[in-house]
Image 1 (cartoon, rainbow, N blue to C red):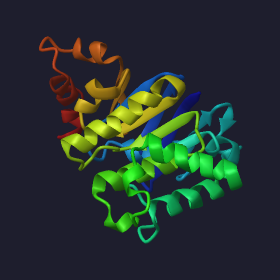
Image 2: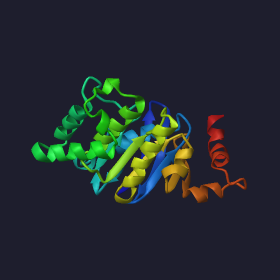
Image 3: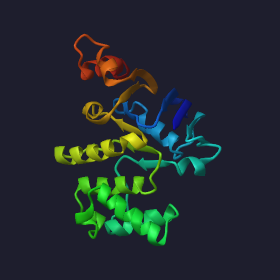
Length: 240
């Protein structure tokens, strides 16, 4: 469903992403892990077409993001970091707007909005303006806009960052419910996300992939069996 081919991104003389390749299949939840500044968000922005790569590309459901950006983006649901939205709009109004941008209207639009409001547990706040919501509900609202067109590929950048334990639990439950039918990437620096929802994880540091495997395979890289120890071993050299 998603194939990333030797993505590179330079900002002047700084090599932010140094040739990243991987694929994600239907039913996989890939944790894209790394410390701050590792190149996670830059990679996500290139995959989704928000940032042009210096070289390389990504292919989503057979559509090259550079050669056929509209076709590729039609298959992607994207939840960026900080969950942007139109805060003066009511939740339902915002989702209706996003649905109309995605090409839905009339009965089909209403059905799509009703479905994502239920899926994102937004029924109780659907008539509130987004600016009055807690951070958790704002995150869920932006999660709902990302899935309103039922995309085959779902990409989320730090989806639970800053949420309290209850809000994290709810967002992770929503991810697990959809995992079987989609290819999902979660970019994060929160290691507990791996145990909570991921079937596989990639560790990135300094713009390069340092490890790729199941959570069990990553733990086996150190006698302690602890993911945080493995993470430090793989990334601390870059930090230093």
